[in-house]
Image (cartoon, rainbow, N blue to C red; front, side):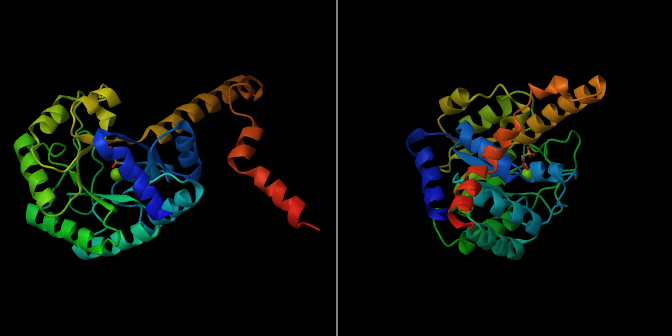
Amino acid sequence: MGKTRTKSLQDKMAEGGLARIMAAHSPLSARLAEEAGFDGLWASGFELSALYGLPDVSIVTMSEHLEMMRAIARHTSLPIVADIDTGFGNAINLHHAVGQYEDAGASAVVIEDKTFPKVTSLLSGGRQELLRIEEFQGKLEAAVNARKDTGFLIIARNEALIAGLGEEEALRRAAAYEEAGADMILIHSKQKTPDEVESFVRNWNGAAPIVIVPTAYPEMTEARAKSLKKIRMLIYGNHGIRAAVTAMQKVFAQIIAEGGIKGVDAEIVSVEEIFRLQNMGDVKEKEDKFLR
Ligand code: SPV
Ligand code: MG
C-alpha cells in the first residue's frame, strides 16, 4: 500500500503536474479531504498540536504524531506527506524517525532546517533559529540513508525567508540541501503576498522541484503556482482545523443564543452522514454474516 501511494504521488507530479495536498489532523478529516478530491494529505504538526489545544513548538511527541498518522493511513488510500518538524533531534534521531514514518505508510517526509525545539513558522515575531547549513546537510544525508524505497521523498524545508535572512541566503541553502540529496525544496514564507516566494522560485536554478504552503499569501492559486513551472506540490497547511473551528464556534454560539438545537439542526450534517463516515454500513453487513 505504501508503494502504491508513493507512486500515485509521483505520477501526480510527473510532467509538470501539481499535487494538491490537504492538511489532516484525524482519520475523519483525512477522509473528507479524500472525498473532496485532493491528491494527498499533509500530516500537519500545527493541526495536530491545535487538536490537542497545544502550541506548535515541538511539544507533541513523535509517538503521538506517528500514531495519528498510522490511524489516518488506515482510513484513506491517499499518499501522506508527513510533517516531521526538525526530525525530533539531530541526524541520529532523524535517521530513526524516517524509518518509522516510512514503515507507517508515509510517502514523503518534510524536514525543516530549524533548531530543536522549533517555533511555529507563521507566528508574527516568532523566535526562528536555523541550523548551520553543514549540520542540516548531515541531517538530510541521514534521511536519504535511512529510507528503504528510493521513491520515498525527502523534502527539505527551507525557513530562511521565515527567519528574515533574505532570498540570497534562501537560495544558498536550497542549493546546499539539494546537494545533500533532498528530492524537493519546500520554501516557506509568511509574507502576505506571493511576491517573496515567486521571486525565490524564479531565481531558483536547481533541479529539485519546489513545494509551497501558501497559507499566509492566499492570492497564490494553483493556476498561479503552475505558471511558475517549478512548483510541483502545494500544501493547504491548516484549512481543515480552521474550517472545523469556524463551524463549531458558529453552531455552539447559536445553540447558546437560542437555548436549544432546533435552529442549527438543518444547518449541520445529519447523524446518518456521520454513520456513513464511520462505515456503519460495513458493521451491518458483518452482523448479517457473522452474528448468530
Ligand atoms: C504545519 O501545518 O504544521 C506546518 C505549516 O508546518 S505552517 O504551520 O504554516 O508552518
Ligand atoms: Mg509543521
